[in-house]
Length: 214
Image (cartoon, rainbow, N blue to C red; front, side, top):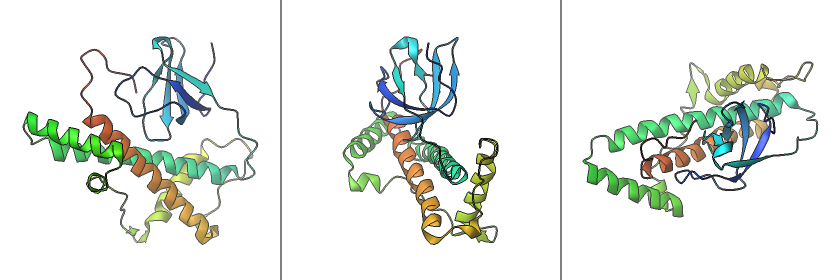
């Protein structure tokens, strides 16, 4: 049996889950591998946390390790910003669904779900405009919000760096292009996770007993 170590990159080959928006070729990072249950927890780049049930028909493949990174600290921070952005996007999407659908009658909620799902699937501008977007305040506790996010990501990613790896540069050491990259990493993963999660919430609910691990 293949051992999927946390941190390894994988690509989706096939899944039997009819409710996910993941498609073959989508990539993600292994979070955990339960060899007893034959499940692999994955943080997908699109924001999904769908676990793979290897004895239930799901198939993934390991991607080749990337060459040694001359700037592992910087790479780790960007990765962490994407992870945190996706987590925030899913949380905001859950709040959106609660506020938008909770007070509607069943037939009204079903109609809204169908409308949103169809619009997201085809990229309808009117529907996409209704989704939460990445709009953080420009400043937080008197500091640039992007700087705050960066410092938090540096602290989180430092625990996963190999011994003697070059640490991430400080915010003051980043040039304007690098600072823009940190915002892009957060924004793109947030927006992708919002679409992914709202699509999941708008699809017909899984029948009882068919819940997938996350």
